[in-house]
Image: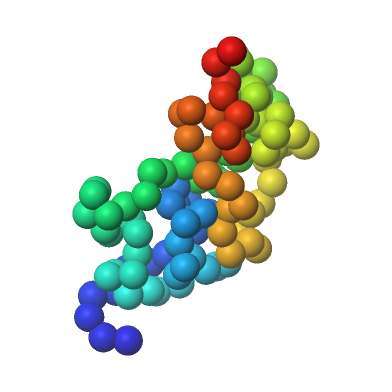
Length: 107
């Protein structure tokens, strides 16, 4: 590998769902292939990272009040509470403000 390098931690990256270089474990990857380093106009819309989902699931378990949209996301992606996603190459979905998998939260 030549050029600038960066550390890929897919579990913490909101673009991991769209990344070809995402790895199951933290790894050094070429910076020019890291979506996080792309200019805004070339970067896809971000979703929620797995760590964000796990933190929100932990908040729900602790009884912290969450909005209905957040609860809907957690019901679909973390129904059993926080889980370690470090063994997966990339998250299976992007989560956008418009909904999850095309389902709108606003009726």
